[in-house]
Figure 1 (cartoon, helix red, strand yellow):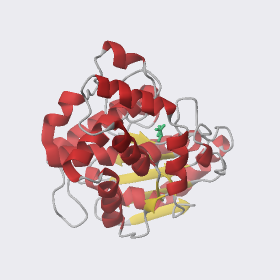
Figure 2: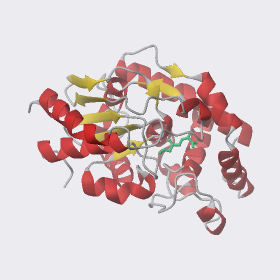
Figure 3: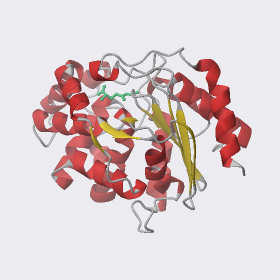
Length: 303
Ligand code: DON
């Protein structure tokens, strides 16, 4: 398969969407992003890497980090995480508060903000440094030691993070946090504010295309755990647009409000597309268009 050509064609197909989305401005430090920037990279299960556009330019990974926090909690703490967080789509915006009250502080899934806060809490208990664990993993898989948290973005998130603070306190009131709200939010912002490129993220997501095997051949997840993470990505990874993303792209994927989307072709590859303009669900308009074109042209989807 000519992956380089497929990526070039996908970038061309996404061009019509350029400038149509809105950059996330509820985190002021992200508002300066160029809405027309675009990059896309693919890493095969065997380790080849292809890229187009600004595929090596770092951007704020935001909620894509939630895929890595969940993976590490599963790897180190096993199925206990599912006592504190569900795995059903929420049908609500990613930072919604409404379900928590009737559902006793147990968030619907690990990829909405409420669920990710619980997962960060458990990773903090397991490692003592939840964000550090995510950074170390990204650096190792991508062989890029420069990957780091952008402290200005993390501070901006904390300063404007009233909703996340409300979610965390509400969850804590139901006894579903093991660490203090302050510590959990600090770690949560620190992993959301990591900067990495499409190249880095495609390489870091490769373990899910390899049924749980890391770049160095060691096993991070069992084959069935990898299947389950991919399933939750498909049903919950793009929030209340997960149905639309499955319809158009047909791959498990995780988006972030920095404009990145990391998608997995099980057995074959991890693909990351990035462009900062977002639709109203918080997914990048051009990245969805590019992944749609890629999976349609290549026939690579889980369906
Ligand atoms: O907590 C927040 O709102 C952000 N740090 C992450 C949100 C996000 O990326 C949702 N993505 N579509």
